[in-house]
Image (cartoon, rainbow, N blue to C red):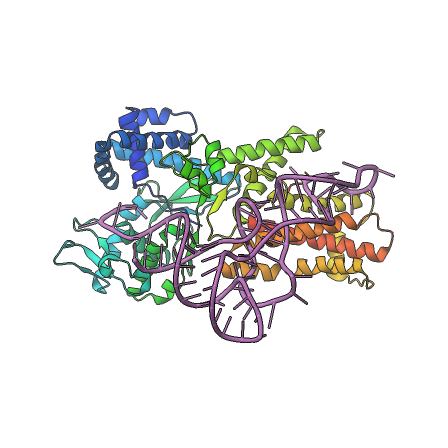
Length: 500
RNA sequence: GCGCCUGUAGCUCAGGGGACAGAGCAACGGCCUUCUAAGCCGUGGGUCAGGGGUUCGAAUCCCCUCAGGCGCGCCA
């Protein structure tokens, strides 16, 4: 799991320009920023956009700053490096809250520093995959010819890879990067430890600084299959990258380059207004309003998590007033993470998500807490039974493994079998989910399973059941449900709270 | 203009050749002395955008139309 850091792009350049032109500040002031640095930059970024609108001539600064960033020269480059590093730290902090961890952070600046592009360029030239234009508008550019209906709308039927001024485009860099991912580049980064999580997990970073490099790093790159998790708007560029592999003769790797495309999250007009945006009549009629970092319009993950946590805290406190405050906080965290995680996986990935605050902050119905609640109820049965000298979870596991049960032909039995059948469909669902790259299938399955268990739980007592045969069947079913639910939780990254 | 995606209940979404089309939310009505009511049960709500075709059978596959979103740069 790698997270590409675009540290030489316009976003970083604009923040540098914001420090210089709006705040009239530099490195010392940046280092002195005490508030959340990502929030600080989020606001500054929007102010830079406003500045460009008021004074369009300021945009000319960008070219010069970008050049300095690529060359890694001067104070702007130092400031940019500091800004990027600190924002990445913020990002990792946020992701750690929901249990997301990365193995490696490859920096765009390191792709440049390690001259990945130069190597790829040689290969592309030698294999005649790209050729230089000798006349016309594009004289001097190196272009890749592209054919087929996918590329039918490309101007001239060719994509510029190297500009006439000799600089490489984003696609060019991406082809080189993709080659590295498959171990086809005959070059590698230097690696160092970026930071270590409390769980001991090390996040590695690429680096060209010999002092930062460490030899004991895991092997990166050389993948058998590559999933590029990038939003659907980049489908076109991804297709060109894959085409680049093909023309270099790597048909197998091209086939194993998977663009894991997902649609954007947009705001419902109501949510946009809640964020303080004034909408035009026209906008209000739209289904969704696009988020925009440039305009400072969006929902920050930390804010959403904070809101979820506050709400979960309230509800846990109401239900478990005698609990230790620290335990309450842990439960609230687990519930907020479950809520956000489920929200993120419940939708298919090819549809624009309409983000709505009320829906996102709900713990009822098809939500993470609903699933967690079902699991907690199942766990509660075992706790109660064990405390009363009955079978605990371990015993139930043994029964499930060794025991068999037979139930009379009744409607009640039908419902027991139906639960068992659904439990048994887990593997098949995971298979389909992997084949279609739709985690939402696992999510829907887990929700349906929780629903069925909740109905079962309501209707059929386990602990109190006097008939030993029914009781054993229910103990086994409850165990199997819980075990399967935990597997689903594991796949979705949803924590299982001890109680709710 | 060309390409990709989407159109299913008031809203948000599942279902992608096979049974009377499903869920959540919202609305309405029930259910806590019995393993936690973040729950359960019930009611109402649909021209599956429209038209044509293929098929024993179409929300699902094909064609056309309409509507919406996105993409198509010597930006990243």
